[in-house]
Image (cartoon, rainbow, N blue to C red; front, side, top):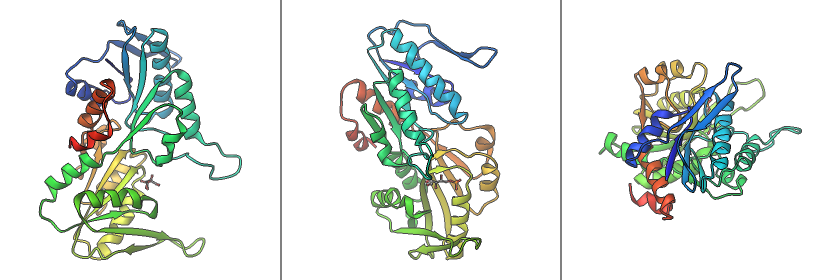
Length: 312
Ligand code: R5P
């Protein structure tokens, strides 16, 4: 087995390697002066089972291209099997045609990855579960939930907690987490009654007196979370914390979160955190190193990956 890291999330790649008690494969992934990407694998990989650890996070197109070029280098170097380990799969939000003559970019990225020579994919909390079917190769969609549950049990031990979905689209995810921790569920229902009139937030469920835990796949601008937190506090919630799989956090998201009424935003390290995220006082990062390390170990040993969840 070999682990190769692109430039998107080297700290997670090192942690995964540490969990697996092995070194990352020596390879060069650099830019020419005109920004073309150049890759060289500096070790023999002939006949190896190779895992490329690369989230297609910001700058998405560069990281995607790195993944494709690393795959090509490995294929030409006769790797036996190539797995793209994409803890965060960028372009996932473009999973359908929202308008006539619009692309389905998530499908295109799945096609590109496969055509480059990837044999299987390991990812986590895809924005829509059906994206798994965009790949015609084996694709495991891991869940951050067991890692979150472990943290929630530590942080909220004995508190009266309620799981909240910040929008109607996230109910399945929130319900599954609520079931794992045996907590009740509430839903934030956003409605714009008339065009041009600001959105009204209705909370389905009684959050009064509860420490509320919002769950979602992505925090990008932070708008969804901050607005939902305000609505919950107005409805009598004791505190609001959010557990989110992927901290995209673009634009002014970090300062929006820091200045919000969220007690804490807990994200995983599927996307490498920048300095602003690392120093934000109400943002905390939990690691998915063990989750991915164990999934890679099991895949390599041809063992069940779904059994992995009993491991936590
Ligand atoms: C939407 O369907 C996603 O699940 C997230 O709720 C959304 O991407 C969050 O975006 P933002 O942080 O920009 O409100």
